[in-house]
Image (cartoon, rainbow, N blue to C red; front, side, top):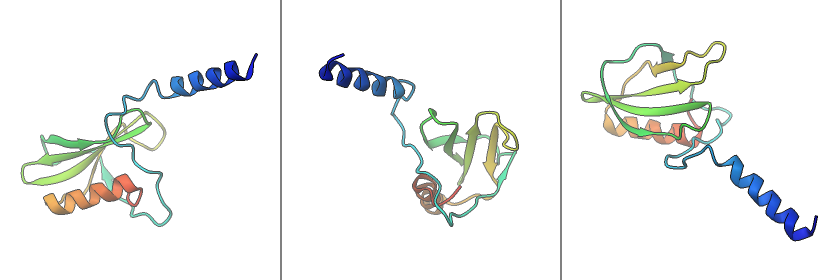
Length: 111
């Protein structure tokens, strides 16, 4: 195989790795050391509307959900031990504080 064919072959493999990702939503950063641990429960505040979400191509995705005048996160995870498929943050926030926590979650500063 020539050098140019090898480069094209590697480029094709790299493109295939990203084929499952629609790349339309942000990907949360890797959780950082010293991050804030969020408390997750299995019940929501009630019916709500998703106002922001992370990409669903990873094992765990997150949604910022507005329920009336308050917000909470919904976590969707692929089935694995000790992690329910859907869980919610135990606390709720007003809009400004919710968006600050969302920024922290995306930056890997909270999980």
